[in-house]
Length: 201
Image (cartoon, rainbow, N blue to C red; front, side, top):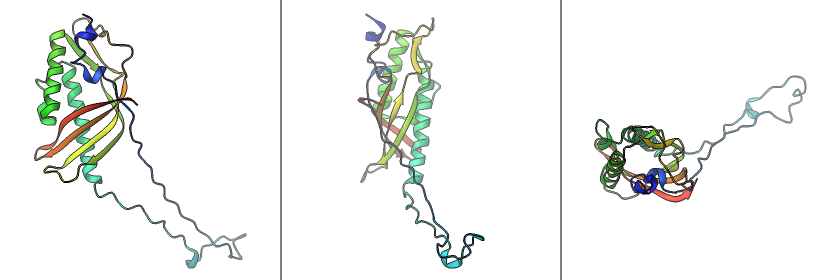
């Protein structure tokens, strides 16, 4: 049995495929000034009170901006904790149960156990881009949905003893979209589910 086949179920984040994300829009504000009818404009530019520039109306502030920033910070922490746990294939000594629960926690613990049994650890760090945060309406606890492009090209399983890279399928996607669901608990945001979406970024 090849290593890739033996650890396919345990390395979902490293072996599964998934896909592209949303782009973040940028806002630019501009203003105009001056008067075409000013006789002295050619030699001595000036701006009269009546021709003073008026500020363009600014876009309305996002009422959920603070909450989204909080989710982003929790999401970054979640992946930092995962990387720490996968680096030793063991949740012990990490804060895994402080950042994730439910299906996501069970799934991660199973993957770590399988890696540990096979003698593998995961080196490097996953990267993310185009992260988008939204909130589900009418939920008992505030619930966030985070979607982004995950890059695992530098996050690789290797033999704990020899450091030799695992034999992974050459067709696997190394950049894919992932959707994460999290709830706001009294202790902070907790990840409930992580789901690769099956398309490349």
